[in-house]
Structures are given as C-alpha cells and as structure tokens.
Image 1: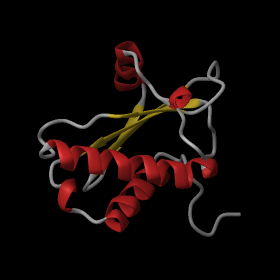
Image 2: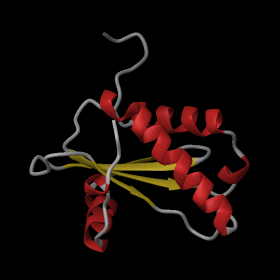
Image 3: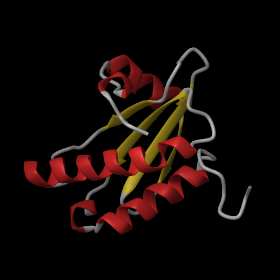
Image 4: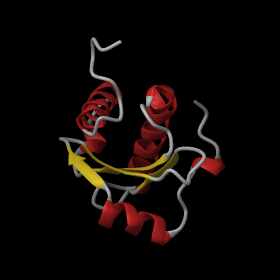
Length: 120
C-alpha cells in the first residue's frame, strides 16, 4: 500500500473524533487508536509525534519508520474504511525498526485490525 497525501489526516477535528469515539491500545513503543467510519472511501492515517520523543531528527526517523510499517501492512487491514492514529511513546527513539514494527503489529491485532497469526 502506498501512503499518499490523500491518506493523511490533517484536520484537528478528525484527531479529536478518533480520540473521543475511537478505541485505543497502548504498547511499549506506540499507542494505536482507530475509529471505523463507513463514509470514508480509504484508510486515513495520522501520526502524532511530540517533543517528548526526542530531537527533530529522532521524530522524523520515527515518522518515517511508522509510515513504512503502515505502507507494508496496510493492505492486510481487515477494514480500510477507518481512521488510524499512531502515537509513538517516550523511549521509542531507541527502538529498532523491528521492535517498533512488532509492537505496532501487536497493537493492531489487539484492536482486531489485522487477522491473528494462523487465521486464514
């Protein structure tokens, strides 16, 4: 899945709606929030990186890694008509790509966004 600008959440009210009405799961490195919306024609993705994560180059690296994870696994999502917000947590700047991907996938499975391993 290629993440283009049309997949980006840009408006504050979208983020607030996911925060108020959506479901969230927190892992070691990321907090993943989602809200299903049948009116959407595609997956809408948002990444919130705060200064608590680290310096600008750390935040940029984390955003690139999360976009790569979503691009890699976005086609496997059970339902693509939803908002998906990823918030990296303090300490994720020291995590490797593999650790970040493993934690993101675990939270996606906990939210039933991806099929469990072994499911057809």
